[in-house]
Each structure stands twice: as C-alpha cells, then as structure tokens.
Length: 323
Image (cartoon, rainbow, N blue to C red; front, side, top):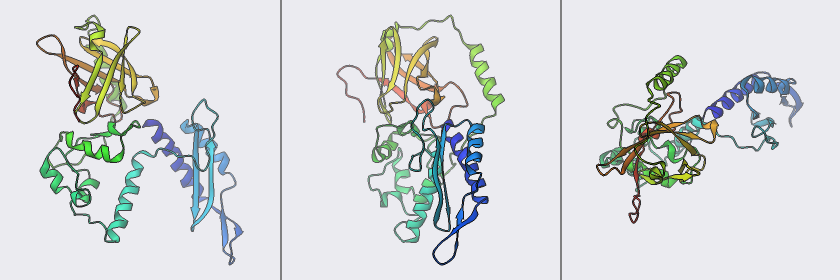
C-alpha cells in the first residue's frame, strides 16, 4: 500500500498546483473562455515525480464541466516500457471510501436507501459473527466503522488482489471474531513513529535465539492449512526450503526462513509488499502440528495485512476444508 499512497500524494500535489494555475485559452461556443493548463505543467509534473520517486502518474483537470487536461506521464511499472496514459487505471487505496459514501448519499437522497436502515433490508444474506450484530447493523454503522471488527480485519480477502469476488468477501465476514463490542468503538487508522518502529525491530533481533532449532524436520511443516475466514494456505517443500502460498492471493508467495524454535519468517518475493511476517507453529501432544499463527515482523506493516487474525489449522488427509 505504501507505493499507492506515495503515488497518490504526488498526484494530489500536481492537481492542487495545476488547478490553481489554470489560464484562459480558446473560447467555447458563446464566447466563454476555455481554460488552459499552466504552460509549465509538464516540467512541474517531472519535478514531482522525481521528488516522490514514482515511475508514472496520470493527471486530469476538469474546469466547469470541460476537460482541460487528461494525460499520463512516465511508465506503469519501473523497468518496463508500457507508458501511463489517460486511460491507465490506478489503485487509490482508501480514497474509495469517499466515492462509496458519496454514492450511498445519492441513493439516500433518491429515497432508495436509508442511513439508519438495517443492512439486511438490502442484503438479506448478510451475516456477522454475532447474529444480533448482523440483524442490527445499519448503513451508517458500516460507514463509521463501528461493527466491532478489528483494524484491517478481513483485508487479506481482497488485498493484495485476490480471487474472491465482492459477494464472497462479504459472505466470509461471518467467520471473523469481533475485536470489540458492537458500536463501542471505531477502527481508526494507526500511526507509528519511526523511532518506535526501529526500536521494536531492534528488540526482536536482540531477543532472538538464533541457535535454536525447529522441533520437526522441515518437510513436516509442509502441507495445506485452512483458516475459517480466509480459506486455504499452502506450505510447500521446494528444493529443501519451505514456500508459503496464499491460495486466493497470487502476490502472497514467500520463502520461509527459520527464526527461532518453531517460528519462521516468511519473506514475500514481491518485496514491494513490505509485509514480511512471523509464522509460529504449535504442536499437539503427539508431536504433530496443531495450528499456526502469523503476525507482521515490523510494526510499520500496513494494517491491511491482517495476518494476526489468521488461525491456520492443518488439513489432514481425507478431511474436507471448512467454508
């Protein structure tokens, strides 16, 4: 998500400066001057791209209902030649919340939706962990984040891009335990000071027992694991190393390296994710793997990587996976 936010910041600066510098150009029908973009827009965009270290961005300026500028700059991906143009689609992260709230507001104005109407009126199949919450949840509750779900809960169902469709993502909410009671709190974004993050990472390294060994041979950690709300996650043994693959999220493929005891660190092959995580296995009384839990290595990891909410159970041969 970091690279998305960095691109958005650069884009917002471009739009703010560009719209302030609009000048009159040719005239529209009826004699109204047609706004023109600032003559130094291209040079300014180049400066912003360099300052924010982004490979490409797109700028659109609309004035009084007329498109003044719609063009792309740079390339879509660093190291590749495909250019950004006026039709290139960008991920805009949580800015989608503004579009969602505005769209719902328009439906309310048209009488098609009610802010305080229950969600089940419009989605009869909607369910949460607690049936009472599912029955009482309103459209307003959804927008103010007071469902009781924890920060980033269920984000792994859709980010990084997964194979689940929107209805399936919503259906799986019923399997996620709440972090707080209904309407008692809202899940707000968190901010971590860089000094605190660095201290936490340094402390983890100092506390590590690098001389410890796993309880089992590496091959015995391999297999299919299932989480109630996410689904299956594969751990495969490849060339003497363990590889983790999230079955519905193609980008989440990473190599497991031993950290200490029965804890490993999965390092995602897509390093731009910046979301490496601990994977800790627990054994049962027979010495077999009973479950595995995950949590982000760095406190600075984006909260949408809600690994901490996963409870991975090994899928035994002949036993069907849940959900």
